Length: 102
Image (cartoon, rainbow, N blue to C red; front, side, top):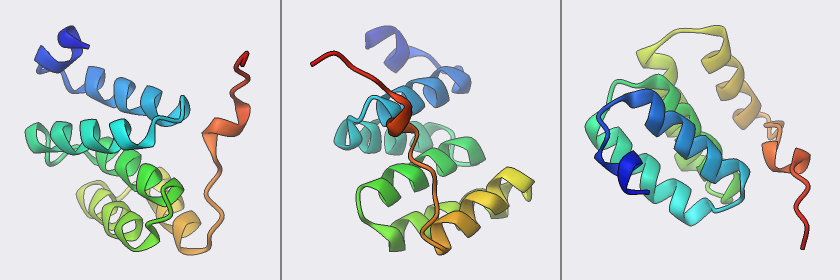
């Protein structure tokens, strides 16, 4: 945790936010991603991750807003696809591929 929180290298933040999303810790994922966006507000990947977290948390309105921010920052195919998937309720859930021993 502390090494990640003290870093200013944005990829570390993207990877950790994705990790929290995939390992189904949505409250911590959302809090961490919002803090990371405070440091890297023009990082479209973090906005996409936040959009996914919000979507899987049942907050489609916020997810749309975050996906639109990502798309406005970087007009890429991935950002456009994420926005369309949220709009059409067809966003793939990365957590379904995770098999954890209970």
